[in-house]
Length: 159
Image 1 (tube, rainbow, N blue to C red):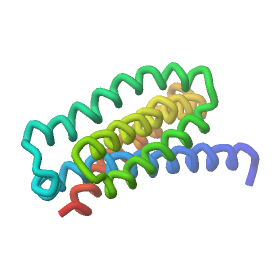
Image 2 (image 1 turned 45 degrees about the horizontal axis):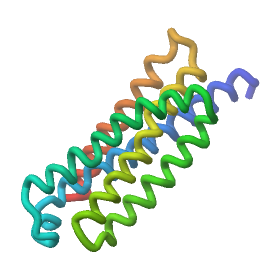
Image 3 (image 1 turned 90 degrees about the horizontal axis):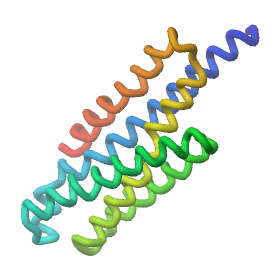
Image 4 (image 1 turned 180 degrees about the vertical axis):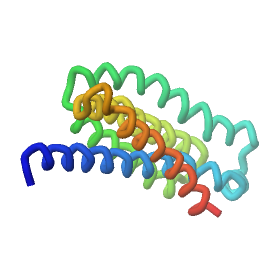
């Protein structure tokens, strides 16, 4: 195998690894939405409270931090940023299973949003560095399409 072939295989290895992380990210993000009714009855909360839990508490933190972390990804080690993000979202997703009440679950959802906000900007930046502009569309599409796979997986797991 030539250096050029190894380099190409390494690039696709990285894209596939990032896509797998995206699948897990989306599955973690959405599986809670499938379990709304059991959670709502166990915590004895309203639809509005669940809407805050599933929407605002995650999405607001995710959206704001994704912008900030995109800036961090441009200036810092993107691999470390992704690793830290994965650790945060994994710990907070796991902690969600042990949440004793509504506010502890909301705190966990905030943590999931914080951790997952690191993946997208850093991954797209890594892909951008690995592939020339005219060859970038396929790996970026693969990474972004992985979210659909993760979403579908979450619904299959949750049902």
